[in-house]
Image (cartoon, rainbow, N blue to C red; front, side):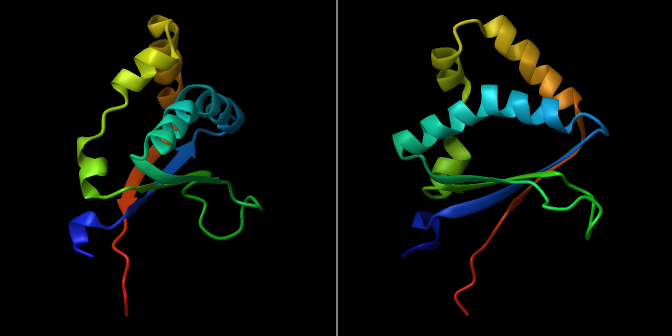
Length: 120
């Protein structure tokens, strides 16, 4: 299978400010997860998984929420826009944008890591 046609997994790491974890997760589940689920339904995304560390303080503490998204292929990753889905799912766009701004205010750091799967 050509590299461009293979699924692509991206790790999305989030580090929330101390005491903001629960609010961040609540806003993520209310406003962003439905958009990701719509992407799975449409076939643009293959899979979405969410993780939090089982124990706090074990290992590296530079993230407290990890979301893995497997895209259908590179084209799905590069061309996708969630704006149209958000408009359809959230008719009250003012509330949606206010809550999304708040979700990102709760972050100390955020970074994305696209992965290349190795066959060897």
